[in-house]
Image (cartoon, rainbow, N blue to C red):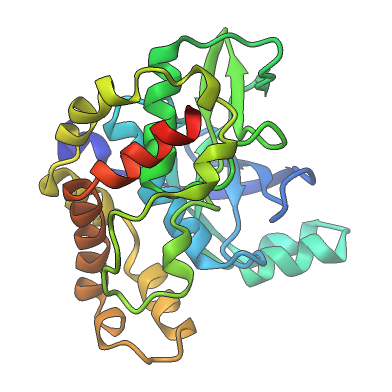
Amino acid sequence: MDSETLKLRSVLVERYVTPLREGGSMPAIVEADDLGTYVLKFRGAGQGVRALMAEVISGGIARALGLPVPEIVLAQLNGDLSRTESDPEIQDLIRASDGLNVALDYLPGAINFDPAVDVVDSDFASRLVWFDTLVSNVDRTARNTNMLMCKKQPWLIDHGASLTFHHAWNGVVADPSKPFAPSSEHVLLPLASQIAQVDAELAEKLTPEVLRAIVDEVPDCFLAQAASERGGDSDVLSDVQAHRAAYVNYFVARLAERGRWVQGVIDARA
């Protein structure tokens, strides 16, 4: 997948349709100026801007690996839309999210993935477990699969809880080979019998150039806000370009030293 394919479109939110209250950050279905319908993830939600950065980065990595993710777009939101909403909580959320946000293409008719009913093969399961371990995604369990079924195909959604490392880091890569313990609870781990077989192929897709193209799609304002929330204690994160490079360096190191974490997830399955 080339860098042009990974570029994100920008849309302008024109109408707030309805909240999705099952989501912890209360995302919403919205309509945009391209006539599209999207699930909007709010910058002003409790999980903050890093959740939106995780959507862009982890979602971009998934797309680069050929995993099915609804189109991700950057969504401009006007805080004045809050005037049309009667719910004070929604009004506050819209006002707090004035400016740039992240949204995913809405899949009409999609239903939540049910591991007891919906069938995927071992190849897909192995690729998904490998990806979720790479990006340290805690949200793909039987309690919360974060997958939808649409036209008999699984789609990956909601990567805001991935990249757990970046909530308390200073931009320095530490122990990139560390196994990801939550992988032991992955909903598809029992089916993931081909992790060792898909490992090299998946890693080869994530070249430094591809990773840079993915991270380049994170808006400067997101990086600046995340750095400011750290209190200015990291020279690396305070510079936008160095901040970008820190993410690329993290994944380059994690891929270069993946033997330990790949074996960790294989052992967890055993």
